Image 1 (spheres, each protein chain N blue to C red):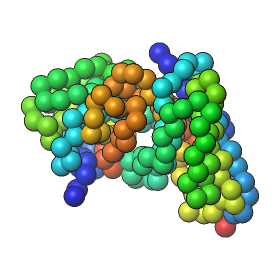
Image 2: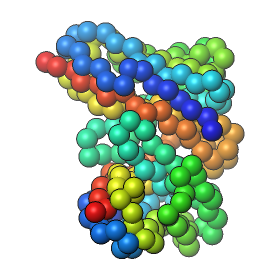
Image 3: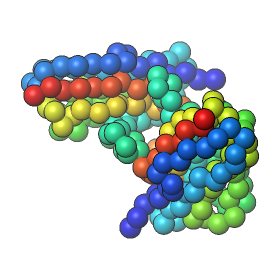
Image 4: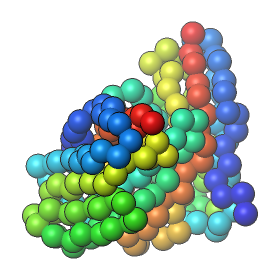
Length: 116
Length: 110
């Protein structure tokens, strides 16, 4: 069982470039989400999905797009990268949406993104 | 926006010492989770508490949820170097979101 797999591990972009951070899970989890982690600010929710075809905005969605065409995959797209998007990005999944408050979030190992 | 404040932000102690990390909010949460994160990895869930006043123990770690479900604490007895890491609390509501605290970076020196 691979769990939650994120690629790439590291990425450097120039301002204005676009890219997609990949996230895949093999646990048949309904719930998937993207967080960014910045020093002193904890983890902030960017977007989340409660199932294939359903996405919603989190706390800091501006500058990011997501889609959920399959249960397994939840890519995060940066359309025009900005230095403020330099951060570590984590994808996380959970089995049940309804019982999220009691459910365990499984995290990927993160993508460290630098925007110059 | 529901906020969770963790204290202290940084903690450096010697092996064998005891410590407590706090997680406080002005909001009520339906559950409170604690995660530990090591460098280059994602957070890993340690425990979930859901009932006001609940106490859970995980070996040398003791977790408590406040009676009013607005705060929580993590107490580590006889800390070891393997306890080093970033400890994050996260509050759950009835929706599909978790609110994370800023984290406490713990360093246990041999």
